[in-house]
Amino acid sequence: MTKTPSYNDLHQHIAALKKQSLLIEIDRQIDKDSEMHALVRWQFIGGMKEEDRKAFLFTNIVDGKGRKFDIPVLVGGLAANRSIYSVGMGSSVEGIQAKWDNAISNPIDPQFVDNAPCHEIIEDGASFSQPGHGLDALPIPVSTPGFDSAPTLSAGNVITKDPETGVQNMGTYRCALKAPDRLVVRMATRVGGAGGYQHYQKCQQMGITEMPVAIVLGCPPYVAFMGPQKLPLGVDEFTVAGGLAGAPINVTKTKSIDLVVPAEAEIVIEGFVDTTRVEPEGPFGESHGHIALEEYNMPMRITAITRRQKAIVPSYISQVAPSESSVIKRVAYEPLFLRHLRDENNIKGVKKVSLHEPLTGLLRVTVITCDANMPRTEIWRALYSAAFFKGDCSKICIAVNEDIDVDNADALLWAMAYRTNPSEDMQTLPHRGQGHGPKREHDGEEDSSVLIDATMKSPMPPLALPGKEYMERAKDIWDELGLPQLNVQMPWHGYSLGAWHQIWDDAGRRAAAGGYLENGRISKEQAQENLKPESKLDPDTGLPMKK
Image 1: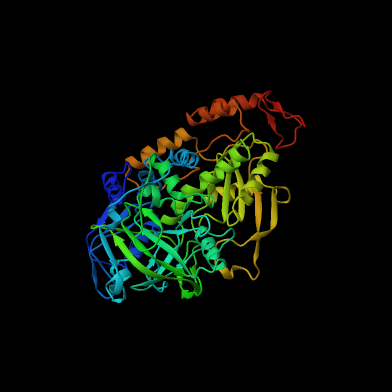
Image 2: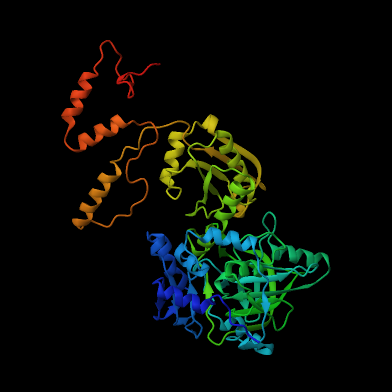
């Protein structure tokens, strides 16, 4: 019998987003093939702040030929921004990392149920070959109109099983629709291999010509977040999802193959991947920000599609970062990096690890925020550890101090410009894999990494902006005058970087209060004879600095 879950399914998640004003419902007719993703894309490239981005629920959908669909589509519903992700996690944004840590350390086995909601409607058999049936009945959007050659499942959790151990794996792989009863799956072949691809290779080695696959659309958020999360191979993602939920995840058997899927899934596509042949797939806009050109990938024969009575199709905004997929990955990957450096390698001075998102898509630039008193040897140990943590990440590794806004590329360049001596503070590492990116980026198979220590090597003078209290006062006046809305980012006020003294604070306050004449009286008393101009003053003594 069905057990009532203690966690939200996708419908309840949407209701929670609506309650928190994180959902936009679109009742206007929208073409899924040419308009839907382009419309939502504007909130990622239109200069909006991340916190202003929303989830979009489309309820009046047609395709490029005007055919109507009765299944809504949710775009940006899991991670258009961190707040939306946190709703799915049942946690504050600040508590996400601790919740992941606890779930990975304390997994909970799933529980089997009968009469699962995902089996309320079952389609199989001869109808699959007819237009308007099977996959063709689902309103799957074209992700990159003008470049993609097919509607593509971008938010599916693809489930496969190790043919030797029977342990399942769940990953997020793109799946291009080819016919009502056929699609082509791309299971990544990158360094280390995706779990599904390793299962594919094992099937080939064992002479298994068809590999069972279930593609789940619209999991409960705790389960959906498992696909992009990089857990060790051999770990059953349902157990970690149970750790997130604090209770077992309800699962059920598929109808036409031997796999286990979430009972509260919206839609489950069942079938077999042919391990003896491949079919052209693509072009498709990839998460590394370029169009992936046409390649051969794995054809899948559909044997059944099951769904809920009132199913909803989720679709990720991917391609050029920032995007929904990059937010999901960033929130998942950054805690892994931090735990690796701080806990597993015992580098205690590391405050946080940030993966640069816009355009670089998280995989190319890694920024390590270090304590101001961190020894140089520990900074370099952190840089090396981050560079080698994942084979497809950290082409550029930068160490900075806590005053640097890691999401401000100008601040990163500022740190590199004034806090590095390139001959001493930069190193290159050869023989790195190319990782995820446009395949024609290099002629060879190898890449390299550059490590940059852009931390302060000694105290520095303050940043030359007005002090915080003066900028706050000016901001109040700005708002009072109704001047254009500001997009404030750090640094927006001056602050000490160590090379500063109380006497200069006092002088600054006097000058800001109109008391510069008093400062002039003090400096006259400190005048010196026969001293070279631009000689330094020792603020502790009021005398020239001794060499």
